[in-house]
Image (cartoon, rainbow, N blue to C red; front, side, top):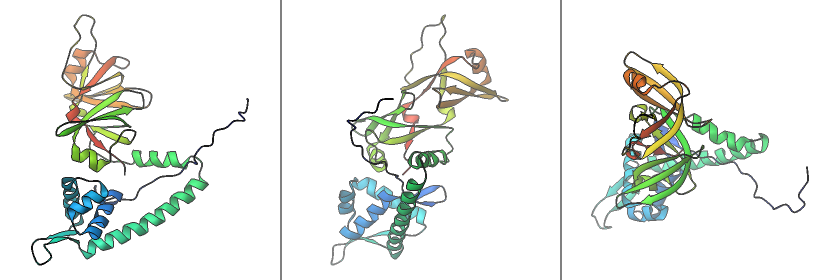
Length: 278
C-alpha cells in the first residue's frame, strides 16, 4: 500500500450527545427548552426569549405549555398589568430545573469525553444506541438525513434521504420544522404506521397505476405473516431498511405477495411524523 506523503489535516473526531428530562413517555425538556427557560429568565418576556433562541412566538408558547403540563406544576408564569406592565417569570421549580440540567450536562460531557477516549468507535455506536432505544407505537421507524426543505405558505415539505438513497417526503408545520431544528444535512427519523402503508405490485397485464400518495418506496417482499383477517407484509428497501404494511389476507392473495416479489410501499406525505433524537 502506498502512503500519501501529502496528507490533508483532518479535524479530530469528537463524541456528541445530549441530555433531556422525561416525564413518562414524553420529553419534558432538552437543550432547546432549557435554553428557552434561561432566555425567559434573562429577558423577562416570551417575545424576547423566543427571539434570543431563534424560535417563533407560537413555538415558544407551545413549548412552555408542554413543559407546564408535563411537569405537573407551572414552570413559567405570565403576569399581566401592574406598575411594571406585566411580564413573564420562572417559578422556583423552573430555576431549579435549569440548575439541575446544567449540572447533569456537565457530568454527561465528562462521561462522553472519557468514553470517547477509551472506547474505539464510541461516537458512532453511541448515536446508534440512542436510535435503537427509541420506543414508539408506529411500526415503521425510518432513519435518514434531511436533503431539502421547501417552505410553503403554512407548512413545510421535508425530504428525508434514507440510507439506500430513496426519499421520504413529509409535510409538517413551520413550527415543527423550527422546534425540531430541521435543516439540510441534519439527521431525523420518520414514523409511519403500518396501517397507513398501501402496497402495489407491477403486473405486465395491467396498466401502471397512478396514485396521489407522494411517497412510493420500491422494495422486495421479505416476509408475509397471515392473520385471521389481516396480514403483515414486510418490504426490504435495501440491506438495512424495511417497511411493514398491514393489509387484508385477500389483498395479499390478489397482489400475489410472497417472499422475493417486487412491490412498492406507498403512503401520503401527511402520514409521516418526523422526529429527532435530541
